[in-house]
Length: 397
Image (cartoon, rainbow, N blue to C red; front, side):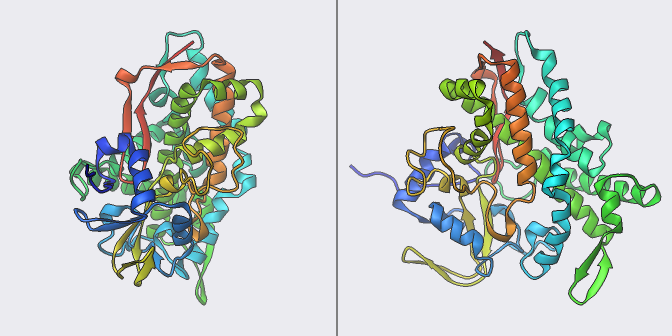
């Protein structure tokens, strides 16, 4: 008998439903994978992904991080699309938004939001864990930080969802995604202009007064850079955290004993969040442009190639994690790849962990006996770089 060679396509929605099987074959049979249809390479083992994330001289971010859009340099001043030295001074500025102190100050606000969303469903016939909770919380939190008007925060979330949407079998942006990007840019520009006229106690107002050291000169951010900064924060703070919360509902429904352990001992929840991030990475794919020829496992990847780094696969690599396909809240995790690594380590990691912890604490208080997922009406979310759920109806036990 012959078997077909391993295959992975980040644009294939059906394959994405059971993507861990595909990634397992890549790790074992083709650790340096080449997709002939789309012309990209892929690394799937933990050590290989880890090393590539650290090697910015070989694996450049200047062409973007989505595998469908690495033909030309981005030219948009977002820190995740920069290499040193430009990256370094912009990163220092952006880091001011996500200091542990600033994030910790949000906890009471997050708890109040969770209470508002969840209390109404206690004793009910059920609710949509994503549409009525998980997808609502992150835009309200990041919107509060940035200064987005409360009435606009869900609209901003939906625009960002539309911006990331693509049609199966196509690589370029759809008219809907292009329109959403334009709308978000216009919204951010209007907000910045309004803050120039009427500063507030929010992040945009602070950034308007911030000075950056750009080489030998000190200057303020341009409006173009400020719009890019807002786009980054909205994207980082909304899409991936919503997917993280959706996976919490799915995984804890599938692992009732782990859920019961978290109910009995809430001190396990922080490590449970880390295991959840490892087990189902909300953003499991990152792309880079290969800046010079590089060899992996005896194969040469030529300069100019697109390299897809499968951090979601690396998180399931048995070389790094014993019994990796088991969700284990007691697992000792020294590090996982869900926030990336190196100079592009996720700036919002503290905030994502805080939102994940508070959400689990409050959900488990209200629904200690768990919930059943209505799989017939659930809908998985998919882009080339993000996995999770768009709809997830649940019924509490």
